[in-house]
Amino acid sequence: MRYAREYFEAAQRVLERVWKTQEGNMKSAVDAMTRVAASGGVVHVFGAGHTQIICQEVWFRAGQPACVSPVFDEGLFPYNGPGKGSALEKLEGYGRVIFNNHDARPGEVVIVISNSGRNAAPIEVALAAKEKGLTVVGITSMDYSTRVSSKHSSRKRLFEVADIVIDNGGPEGDAVISVEGMTGRAGPITTIANAAIVNAMLAQMAADIRCLGMENPVFISANLDAPSSNNEKLAARYRERIKYYGG
Image 1: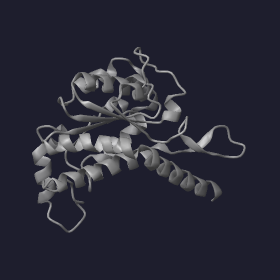
Image 2: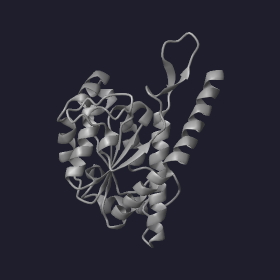
Image 3: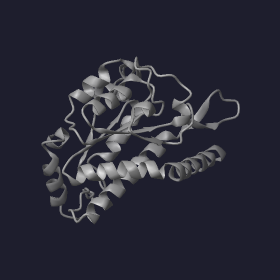
């Protein structure tokens, strides 16, 4: 279990580094998110490929605020074929179409997650959001992104577009474990880092909203022996803004 232990140790190092170096940027993001949520607005989350896992992590689940609106797109889901999803993520114009068909309003916040920060879809979502007057929080690997060129005609990478940049601490290429005799590395790390960053910010946002004297904004697990009226009430509040609550 040598390599399994090394992975746990690597994950701990990455999380510690993120907290030590990104706390200030995370606070800036939380402050913006709290202002939006407290005023009745919505926080949007976008990822392409495997970073769409984070969109699913934060939407309509126990402990998460109801005001989170995922920017889902079936074409970018890996289960529709990794080649197709990868091609669409690089297709210029696709990200702008996705975001312009999403109910996002001036003054709100969008969290855009892209480890390399170089592909067209996340860059275009960030650009379209800024044009609509949203604050863009970019979560990316600075080690990765600063070593590669943009694949978008603007020549910009996500960290060069976002208003607030949070470095997820992942390495170039994402994986962290070098195995003897194996080409390349094993053990991708950024899903853990991205989930920790977004969950931490949403937890702080929920606490900050409560400190303002507002109603508890988070969902309760449906598998607890507790009334479901809390969840139904929260979903109903945002159903007009977040279409997935109507399904």
